[in-house]
Length: 182
Image (cartoon, rainbow, N blue to C red; front, side):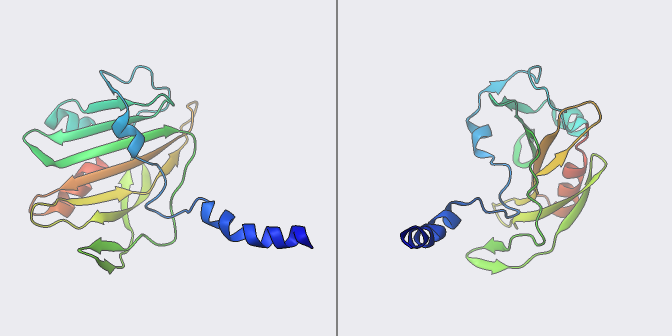
């Protein structure tokens, strides 16, 4: 009887510790922002998702490589840090897709949103608005974390974030997100 009572007391605590799967979770971007910058991706063994068209327009991206073999590519329009594309990648399979995207939170107001679908590197990927933008704040759209298995290559998971403050930012964001390829 005592064991059952102890388990009943521990169950709510264990549920709070369990990882929560929401579209906003998934690949944690924080470690990439603390990872050392790199000159190239030579040590990375997972398939490289990049944006050749943005490299032609804006130049080489900033590169960070984690000790675990992941990478972060940060493309920025010269002279305009509001325009950009960030590609995050980790080894292994992680899928943060969910039935519904998170609500948009703008000035403490919650609004439901629908998934946006983008064709990225031959795959239809769900994305959602992280920040609707306006004024000095760019619009930010993030994909869910999605796994990719290419023949003969290790499985990896990717998350892509596009930002724009242009007049038609949805067109720019679509262009940035769909420019990613292997």
